[in-house]
Length: 101
Image 1: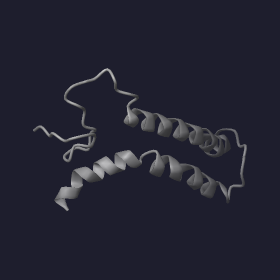
Image 2: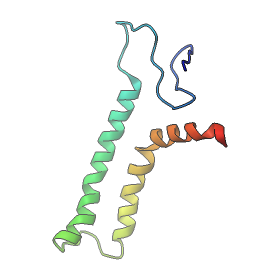
Image 3: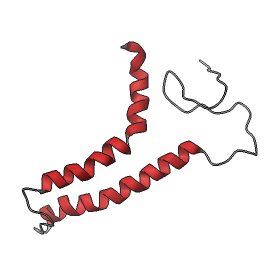
Image 4: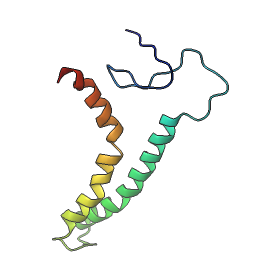
């Protein structure tokens, strides 16, 4: 099935970004690529301290934070990774099931 729309948007069935029918040489950077690249780098930067807090305690017995605070620190570091960095994926997944609801 084919969808045509004036301007950028997403497919109403699967949530993929719609591409222009005629490519042009005047196109600037892809905004979707720029957004996902930024999300990747921020999620990667938050993953490093998460691994240090969670894995160093298990592998080497080095507790960077107290064992009682460790789950809360891990939650605080994990929530932005999952929710903010993964939001476009949740949004597209929800778009897929929204017509059925």
